[in-house]
Length: 94
Image (cartoon, rainbow, N blue to C red):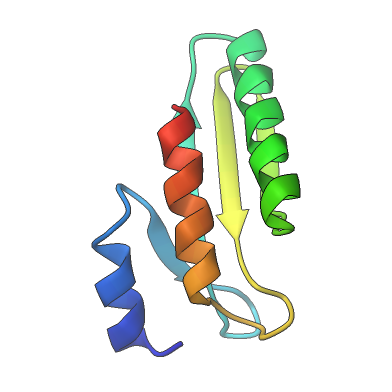
């Protein structure tokens, strides 16, 4: 997916950032703040249910008061439309 197409899809999701990894491949990332560890953990569990249903598994980092979600399609080494769909579904949890 080229930068022009990424920008079109990016307008459909809220507050996600597009970055490049060390191999110059694009990925989506978003930081979610929470009030405590249990809320962060609960959110991660909800993401995992969606990820399993979609068979699309993001990288998730979490701790006290935060969750960071990174979405990337390894098979194509970049972003696909399904990455943006997953981002949208994750946003609907919160």
